[in-house]
Image (cartoon, rainbow, N blue to C red; front, side, top):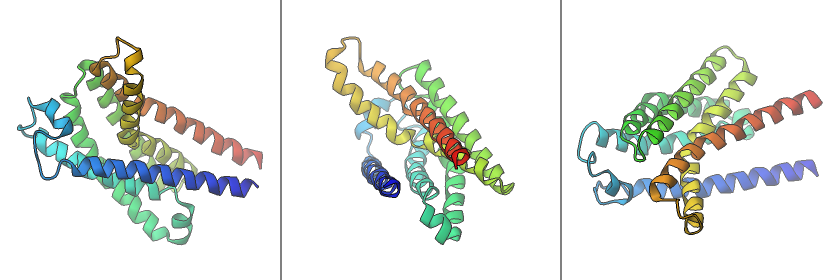
Length: 218
């Protein structure tokens, strides 16, 4: 019974992630070819034609998608056990895409983020935590301390998933906006920015605790 529930939950996770990834890809494709009147760019007319902002935005859009796809493979038992080489290659893609492109470009975008200082500091903190957790995951992989490596990868990927959860929170907050007069678009952006990664990190810690507790129970 437990195995059936476990497989069912894994299927649900895969379907949800697949759907959210499809939405992310759809959003990304909207920015190619480049047009300053597309979606989010309408709100960034003060920087949309400047460098390095434009290059950072395009880099962030492309590499964030690679990060999500590569990161998801790291938690597949079948890939890790049956094709360890693929697991390692995808892991390196995740590391390089995160530390070499998605994270640096994210810092550039954070400086001019909408919502003022609250949102800007939010994205800077997110970047620092994401980079730190990714480096720890890499360090423990080199040290062959696999439990610690797994735990830090869970944290790192949870923060990477903020690209998806941020948009999910946005949809939810706009649904309740008619009932809360004070909830302006700026407030929504500030809230979704913070909720997008803090809740993810909390869930990651719960998952890590559960995995540790489960191991001690057997």
